[in-house]
Length: 286
Image (tube, rainbow, N blue to C red; front, side, top):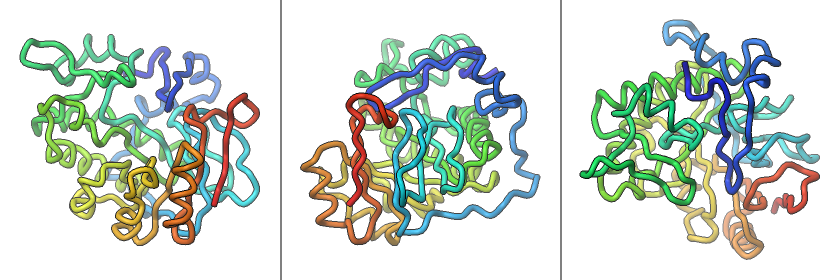
């Protein structure tokens, strides 16, 4: 049983969307439950992972899928969503933290995989109310990989071409209990799993781990607010321009377009990454 069953909240930037079990049943094997029952075996041959090309106009749709605008060639969507037909599809997976609705499942089934402080209290990302997962030991990382890896397999089975495991930077919110090395080691397991399933894997933010990208096995990057923090060029150089840039304000978007818009795919989205047609929806490209 996975933390997705029987119902769960999908993590979004700024919003949580309820997906009931009926959604899984409606798609047969399903994006939500197939990852639990039909993992991709590493021994089974898989297509070679293909990273995105630098010139792919991108849309960040992790708040809910909708028909891409004219000219868009690459889309990121949540693992509970369907890939977009005819696009290069990146599957969003919250890999380093537990979603709030899944916390009871983790407590019941894998309590020792939740990071705790010296008092035994959960270490929580307060911005998203998400408990951090414990990547501190090889055994825990292996056990976490068996869970998150099934989600990655589900992305491949659904038809995605790549995966972006989020919260690679959870060590920054761990009160010193996690280190970059802990998360890099877990990311390396996820990269191996993704490649075995025929998926490219993207580094999500975290410039501090750019130097370890080859060791980990990252193929490209998805970066939020690199224009704001003047980091876009670092990602561009590290990944030979295979970078998707997401900005959330007009000022940061303008900065990113001015600095790397001729090299990278830069998109401005609203903070809640709402689907097209909803109030507050924003979508711009350089």
